[in-house]
Image 1: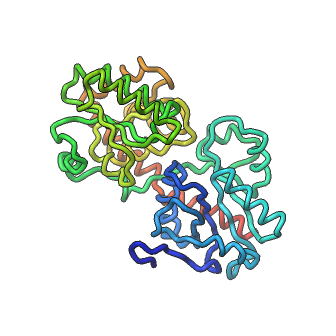
Image 2: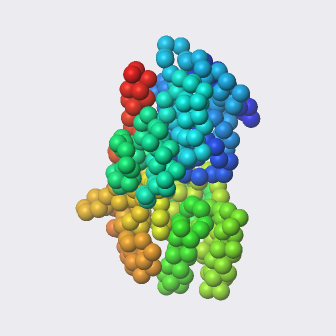
Image 3: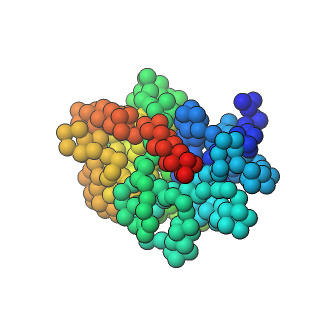
Length: 360
């Protein structure tokens, strides 16, 4: 076990599954691995990560360990390399097909669009493909196994005291808060959220808004324009840009409503994170959002058309104004997330897939 501040390096001979992470910046894949790998380890999976950008507490191997991949782990004839990006598929294909290392490659696809010719070729070279939703599977030209992402109910959970949860984030405990978390960019619909809040908040003095996340370099101007718009509306004290937080679970606990305004999304974990925190969700009809949420009597929130500001204003305003309905949605959201989307379920289904491959 690694000590604080020390990487948890594991012996390559004990690793059966490698989960590469070839990107330093926080992303949806990063969030997935941070939650999933501990659950896989808890199930007895001999798994380790490779690459930067992940907490040191996760089991890691070094790049120098790749020279030992010609020798499979004890009791196995091969290892699994589980890629989630193009840049993680390509080196595995080279190691397997050029250097003849005993590897089987699994790829998880979250994309809901037609792939480029290059990506199609990479996917065609996989030994197995996982889709994160039925919609994602429909865009693939190869068979896939649908395994939806799960949520860590220990990390994402309702607060024991909502007022204290708001205080812990330096928020006014007497206010209700609606949040929008994730990268700040046009694709994520952050501008739609800001425009909706500028319209809704002046007539709802008991509500404020929180935007958590960062803008990468090419989206800094976009974020600046949003801040200027908020300031021009006189709402700088009530539409808060709080930056990126690795302990984002604390911010979910401070919310009374979560909005996922994306124009496009692959899977999208934020509605699950909110629901597991006991927060109702208003989300656009993109990514896996319609497959994650529930309507009818057990409604967990509301799905609206993408890129529809009027629908966002009407939907968010209706939920904000109805305390009883919002409380019921919060209860339904928590129950639904815990019963249908436990991270342990995702880990078990992946373990079944790995074992099928390893036992071939």
